[in-house]
Image (cartoon, rainbow, N blue to C red):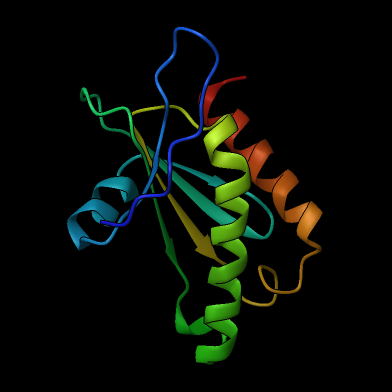
Length: 127
């Protein structure tokens, strides 16, 4: 599991790291959680209810998104959006899976993609 360096939080809260989901079982567990359509992608969120404060995130794009070049481009955009948004708006102890959509994830303006992720997270966490 690859881990990005922790982002310092405000005083009294632990530093949270962003871990990448790699195992199929983790993706299947996240699929049983909440599903929020976010315009340019689908967000699946699952509360692990454990002591681990790490945010875990996975990315997937089916062949409907396009050939390998298109799928990789969509996943790169999702990874960067998650890196910028999840550490600040995600909740510790949650798994998130971002699923790319055909003709939308790669074509959407990046600022709109970030807004989509913020909006989806607020729906999941009720903020």
